[in-house]
Amino acid sequence: MLKTNPPSNLTNLEAKEFSRERYKLDLKAICWDILGLKNLWDEGHDNLIEFIDAPHTQEFKKYLFLAPRETFKSTIITIGKCIQEILKDHNTSILLASDIST
Image (cartoon, helix red, strand yellow):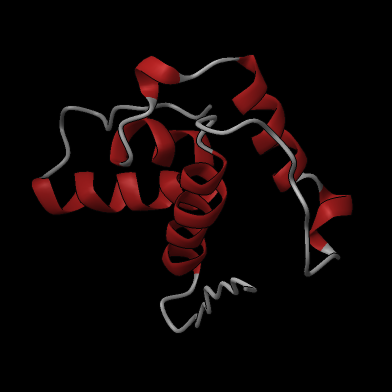
């Protein structure tokens, strides 16, 4: 995890830019600071983020992550990663789709 607090001598605008740049590189910081998962975090979440951000994973377009309910898979992967990708490129388009067969 990168340095979390901006230096105290920054203006408000500079502090926001510092945070934006940090969030582009640190998915855990997004989950802790923006999504409020700090008190619910454990080593399994670190492993998930490490796998998602690994270079070998970047070449694949589709993933299947299997984990029990209420382990914040959707919050970390769907919401957190989407926030990070939009911060990296504000022209990014992300489609979230679901299908329920009956």
